[in-house]
Amino acid sequence: MTTTNTPVDTRGPIDDTVRAAIRSMPKAELHLHIEGTLEPELALRLARRNGVTLPWNDLSTLRQQYDFSNLQSFLDLYYQLMAVLKTADDFRDLMLDYLAHAAADGVRHAEIFFDPQVHMGNGIALDTVMDGLLEGLRIGRERYGITGGLIVCIVRDMPVESAQALIEQIAPRVHDLIGIGLDSAEVGYPPSLFTEVFAKARAMGLHAVAHAGEEGPADYVIQALDLLHVERIDHGCHAADDDALVARLCAARIPLTMCPLSNLRLKVVADLHDLPIRRYLDAGATITINSDDPAYFGGYIADNYQALYDTGYSLQDLASWARTSLSASFIDDARRQSMLEEFEAWQRRHCEL
Ligand code: HPA
Ligand code: ZN
Image (cartoon, rainbow, N blue to C red; front, side, top):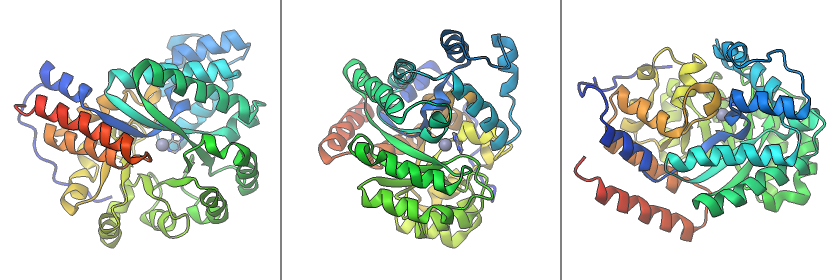
């Protein structure tokens, strides 16, 4: 990945006014795995409640497992802890815990990934998972005013037949979903494997997104665009290795849902300055900032925004990403308009900063 010339930060420590402004900025979260919001405390509580035996019984031993060397080392823990989620109430409570964090971070709308193939592998019915998550979303909308929806993710390192079977299984509940995504171990599992799966899902009316260019090459981003016909790219860090691709993403206004703390913790980059964000901004790319798996990567969405502020980006940069996240959401014009109005009101209140 090409490193970039991010501005040098000479502002000193962030003050409380800026911190509060970042938190209250109306924003959408477009790259969030609900299973990645499972905090270790909740994992242990659910393990006890559901009689699931984990290799780690206490918080301090479990916490020692969170030092990741790459994407796979994180996925190993992430999939193992998912075994504690058994009932619709578990999924509802997980969603509500996330939405409480999201509300405190200024999230007005959230488009949320889930991995049904893994839950079904654990013996949980698709309806149990979806009913719980949707109930959480419904309560969260009443409680916090946050709109949202579910994006069903294909686990790309499971057999393609499993993904094909999933598409058949979701068909009766397609009205409860907003999109299809592609996640999990990337290298060796190119988007081309899922051309037919995505074609079927799009024919059902689902929006299409895919993780590409997180650890995988720029070519996977090109495949996601050409073969899966995605409307957004999740991560997209390695798109920066291909100038023509960056130009294409800009021209087609394809949003990249970036996740800085995730990229740092999974060692996609050694330092946040190494992310190609300034390069993308200078080129005119559409980017949004998200938290990915906040319980694993040391921060929810506002922490990700703040980490970039600490890296030298301005409050105006952050505000432009928040505004972009509202524009890049899969929502109707009325909801988009009302969120953009909220955003303009925030900007008027903070124009002196
Ligand atoms: N990358 C790929 N798959 C994932 C991730 C991620 O960061 N989080 C959960 N599944
Ligand atoms: Zn992700």
